[in-house]
Image 1: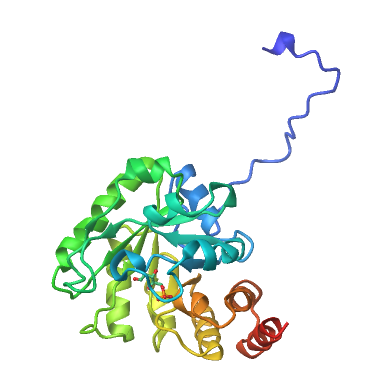
Image 2: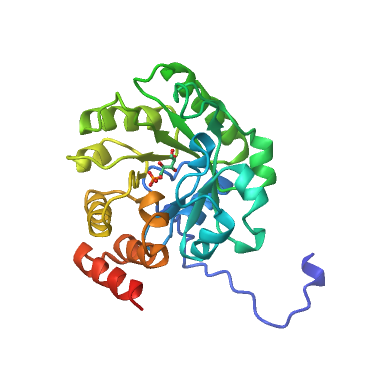
Length: 291
Ligand code: R5P
């Protein structure tokens, strides 16, 4: 109460300085509530506006993926290099230290294994458990054009509705099945649909004319790495995606299956956050690998 404020310092109301309305740094994300934006600002660096997410969720449908057989041994050393970790709740609880402090994007859809129709996914985590684990976003795979297209879209819509209630962003992942094209027409269709239906972040695959895909998508897009490429090729893909307007990468195999995963994630960070060229980043990778 004012009468208990015994400070002798003169009060200062800065009457000539109107309060500024700061705009939020991420594309299309100014309209969300505070907690929602706070979560987004943990995933994306407010300085660069981008993220290097480390994807280690592959086991949810393909079991012990090469490089992820022992996440406690091979992935833990990489965790400090990642802006965010994309994983399942099983791995989060059993292997990842809560002290790591990394924001987590938690895989929240699943069901079928590689032995079945992959598009037949259901929601795999409820919002209460995601909140209990203090994650920064939940991720759901959507199979546009897949056998269970509508079901997977419904999975996402249900998570978006719950997420809006609790301030939890939903990352919509555009699945690419063996029968689905990987061109800008398909990627543009899928990305735009997911954004229209409420995904706050889109994860998709890089393709030709990616700048048009980004332009037509009203929220940030990050790219998956896809199957393992030679390191220079993967760095070039990241560079091209950033140049086309991507807000970062969610890369898995091209990091953890690299001969030198720490060197690779360091090089990817330089491309994403410091605009390093692919050539320079590859030189850095080679130097770090040979140390
Ligand atoms: C795979 O199904 C997961 O969603 C991965 O998180 C995603 O594909 C990114 O990993 P990668 O860079 O290995 O493609």
